[in-house]
Figure 1 (cartoon, rainbow, N blue to C red):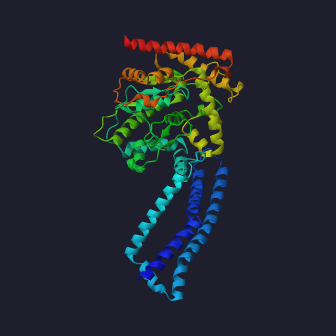
Figure 2 (cartoon, rainbow, N blue to C red; figure 1 turned 180 degrees about the vertical axis):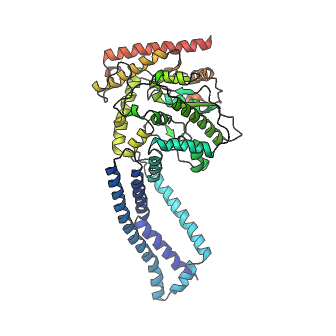
Figure 3 (cartoon, rainbow, N blue to C red; figure 1 turned 180 degrees about the horizontal axis):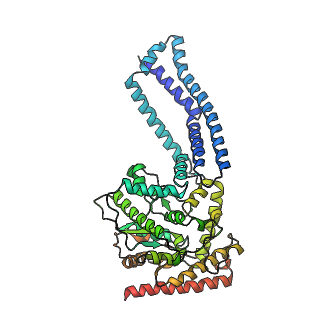
Length: 497
């Protein structure tokens, strides 16, 4: 009996070692990736019919070759398992039938399976801890990419998802939307930090990564995707700014809806601004229902014991191009605008533009992902908004003055709505985050949740090298910044009075 068990364990070890040595798991992963890539290409609205056909053919060839690769590896593993049994039988140590009888016992199968599974898990964790993390590759698996491409194969899918959710999940009733909060500025202006600081207010509901990729059906998708059981480890986002995210992290996904209703605005090399005359009743109705859906989704996920969320809050940098539209369509809204020193802001914009140019050249799915969610701020996707006085065709996007002039024109236009916006200075958020955010909470009518606001903002002064910029352009930017500082201080003084 002992000899039969020993030989059987050698057979199991031979089988596992052969599978590991031939890297059968890696081959299987590649086969799944090839099949998913082929199917995903069929849903990619950015590919021509010829490109889709070519991608499907490539996937078919890869599947055939992958099947042949798996076949010989499995055959080799079976041979490695059978060799100890045959040798033991040939040497007269233990009959092959006795070994097979042991291996077919239920208790043997259960014990060996549990031990093998535990060993694989332990070895996997040890290898991950010893292997440096590679941030240069894609963060999205083939399955992730397939589901994303399906969700963003066209605006019809997202609209249909919203209709399906409305029919399948009628209860609880859709909450009323009042005083929505729009956090906006140019990218790298501190909008994410402000959003995170507002996200923790008990009554605030925001988009989170849990809503991806079916953004318009957050309650339904959360149920289908596994609810709270679904999770990912915290990781740095692609911006390379040290900020870590997981499924519960707040993020900017609202632009998907604007793209759904105004697709033509995104087709050129730049994006026109929205005016009050551009209002669309159908789009406004969809947006309000979507805001209500996000509020309901966060309440469902939080549970009945939590404080009910009532205020929709979004971070959408593109909203800086549609302030008059928002004020007309949502007259009770609150528009929060973080303001950063122009030279520091321009320097950060340039650095991020160069970063995404490299990232998008390495990973084509990053380009697709950013385009689908409407993030055209940086890299090869960069589409500047046509702020007054800005002529993007005449400038090099890889120079600091391009971004400084972009900043100047953007905030010069914003000054026309200085009495309608709430300006937050980046310097104030860094120097006195608690006082600044408590003042904002008070202005917005929110209840502080006892959080430490210092965790959201850098404490170091926000400095940059002014010598990198044209003196005339820098002076123009400082003039606009001075007017914005005056607006911010005026709002603070009114709160004190």
